[in-house]
Length: 264
Length: 164
Image (cartoon, each protein chain N blue to C red):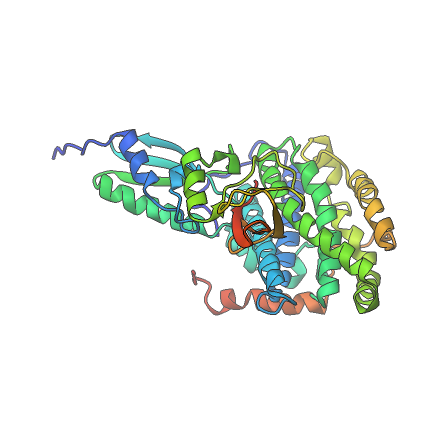
């Protein structure tokens, strides 16, 4: 999963900045890892062959991004990236609550991907301007690849919304279920102020949320879909996980638990 | 004990790397693909730096192993050090004109310039008949670096290397 013996980094950072940066990298990595793994469940059973190919590729991209982010976090905290990815209990994962929902039907998958990809696009695009060079470089690489996800999923969202009938009904049901958790992707992280001050986080989460809402407004108006509500204040959105996630966790850690030294 | 190392030049190393096919696009070698960032030949070792294409590309490990094997044959008395770097990243613009011609001959459309917008309606020439009357069928394909297009002129579906 990782390049061997990469030197450690970040020794020059103040301890509280380093901790906050580690939290940011973990949240970014867990988001991509959990969503990538959940969407990989479509491999072999997507509605049409083209979508089998597309969702599998998108999931593979996300797992690649997660691997690179875990590797960076591993260098910062002097830990084995595979151990970070696989050896935590479900409660220790820090993905946003939007990604805690089960995969659901095709409409739910498209709705979630679109909500996530649009928010993540704003976030990762901003991080490409981070003052911390290793993160800026990696974010720029991830941002290039994510353009294809938004192209694909955006096309699907507009089609399902315009289709009427069962397609639109399913999309609306998914929207009602997922919408309240959409903004959790951009909710503030612990230590955010110190990251903003250091320029590691070029923009505070409130500004990212504002830009995200501005970017998605025209699409939502065209698709006649409600704007996702703002997050309820002061509530944990990255630590209190669902049974659906615990089941997913049991699945993606299964090989590691059977044989921690397994390679493939 | 004194041993004389075999004479190996940088251009011999590059020639050896150029002959290694991309595991996913075998029509093209690693040098023409643009993934070889640097080669350094020292008396006791050869250091090769590779840059990955897509971050999740599973071919990267195969490329590293192939480079190690090929150079171990070329220079058996030196340490072969293959490194992977994200700095100075790969872009589809790094594919050489030789590589582009080789892709076209194998029925794969070379990538458009990296500045091309990522949209559905961008015309791209068909590698079989040259017509630009082609449509994007799927932004994704059999590997992360490819998409599927269809030529409405010669009615041939084809793969194209993505813009990155």
